[in-house]
Amino acid sequence: MAKKQNFLVTAHRSLKEKPVVATVYIILRFLVLGMMVAQFFNRNFENVFLCVLTLILFLLPTILEKQLQIDLPNALEIIILLFIFAAEILGEISSYYTTFAYWDTMLHTLNGFLCAAIGFSLVDLCNRHKRISLSLSPIYMAIVAFCFSMTIGVLWEFFECAMDVFFFLDMQKDTVVNSISSVMLDPTGSQIPVAIHNITDVIVVADGQEIPLGLGGYLDIGILDTMMDLFVNFVGAIVFSIVGYFYVKNRGSGRFAKSLIPQVLNKE
Image 1 (cartoon, rainbow, N blue to C red):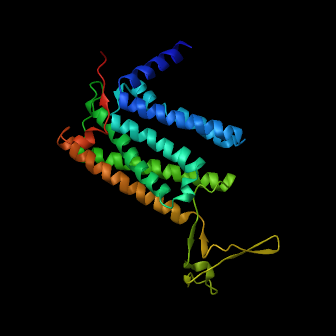
Image 2: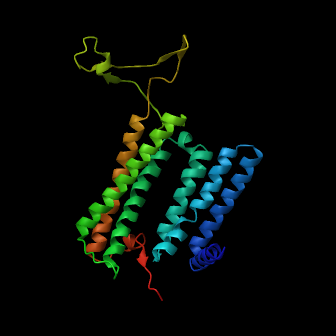
């Protein structure tokens, strides 16, 4: 009980010292609470759970600051809060993933950028921590940040694939294409890819019934979405790795990078 009270006091103090972050946090929290009440009255309890999860995720910046004894820059903290809100509330509950074609792509790009920032920050904190004997060059730190971001991106795609296979959630959104090429269409079995172009519809046979999908093309099951997600994650990771490299090389001269990289707090 005492630990819980200490955490709440720390969280309150942290927000009080950051009025801009506190304003964003309060606005987003009220929006989530309003959405949760609406979903409860609509008896959509899965979305109620997502709202509760979002409120818990909003505490992540404060938890990181307390556990790692660091100070998150205001810009980074606000981006994290907006990212959580955009992914869970707007993306999932408000169906932005299907309403706006590039919503998922935008979030995966931002995810690559944020994960690179987190990976870079962890190495930078170790580099500057007095108790840890570690001194890495700027280029190595950039490579570590990039690899950290891509690893998180790959693990997330593994998670999406598992949810689709075992629970049929379609987290890997399908893509309609008009041309396909496959060696499985080769009647000779000689591993020669056979292409089909100008596909306008696909008929699915299930339980003896033919069901035209009427999607205007062939339904690609997740692979193109996964590749696009990993590519934009790659772009986001590359961008921040370059920013972080010049930040360390010129140690703190970049205002943009400085607004995204956490600082170690003194014990006092």
